[in-house]
Length: 141
Image 1 (cartoon, rainbow, N blue to C red):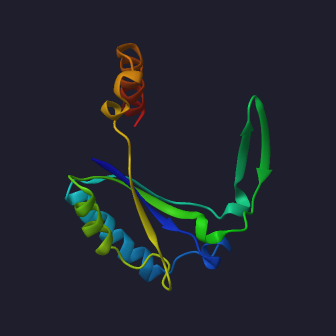
Image 2 (image 1 turned 180 degrees about the vertical axis):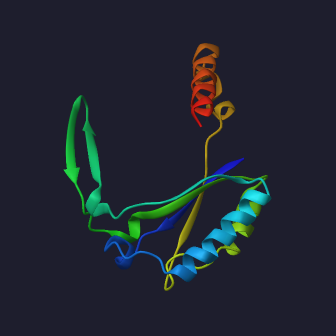
């Protein structure tokens, strides 16, 4: 099972305040643990929403809205993509994480859909295309 583990943004992360050397050291150690355990697939911090954009879809129309976005508690400051056996295991890994924002912080864990969960709507042709794309992505790494 794959899970995305998202660090919720706060005023500091949205202001572009970078983590301290100590936090970067602690996070590096934590990420090393994830790698040694074979569960880390990706991990990245994100720039503040002031450097981002949103694309709103309404039928065939696309509208672009530039950041910043007002609700910082609904924004993401960074993420990990991990592969573990269960939600319980994902929670245990997150509980071991250093506090990512050095004050109040919240981390959200969400399971990633796997191809087999889409049922018959994911036809053999679509499944083959998906597998081919994943192979191409992995070859680029």
